View 1 (cartoon, rainbow, N blue to C red):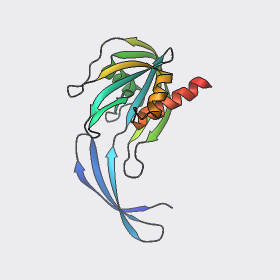
View 2: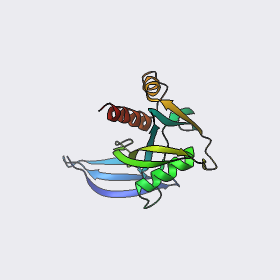
View 3: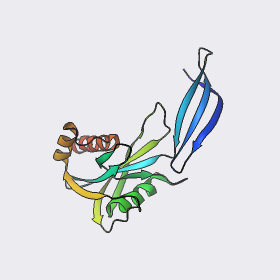
Amino acid sequence: MYEEVIRSDIVFSGKLIKVRIDEVKLPSGKIAKREIVVHRGGVAIVGFDENKVLLIRQYRHAAGKILWEIPAGTLEEGEDPLECAKRELLEETGYTASNFKKISQFYVAVGYCTEIIHLFIANGLKKISASPKEDEQIEVYMIPMDELVKMIYDGKIEDAKTIIGILLLKDMMEK
């Protein structure tokens, strides 16, 4: 089932991603090309206290609309995922947390992208002061879990990492 890489070329290199074209030999012996988006990976944080979850709203250019999301961000080169989670939570929301726990990791789009998101839950939230990046305009909300689940099923939350994070936390809270 494995594919042997015969040749690999970076055809685009930007600030956030690279695009690589791999020529691979299939188990059948045939040759195929694979287009791969290379990404450093990221983190996402489900911050919660007292059955309320920390969500942000921001405009996402790729989607062309404002989305509900859990805080998240891209790993810096060589950065530990936990340190990134702490940094992103504070930058995007102005909150710190006394407890962080990694609960999962998953590929964003395994068919063409190397990005893995490390998913954390965080509680013991304390409001300090947000410091979003210059190009980010973020609104911060604390929303009851029951309302979030309804928002998912009503199609108001469309972001995959947010849906995964909320539903995993809900499952953990029920056990």
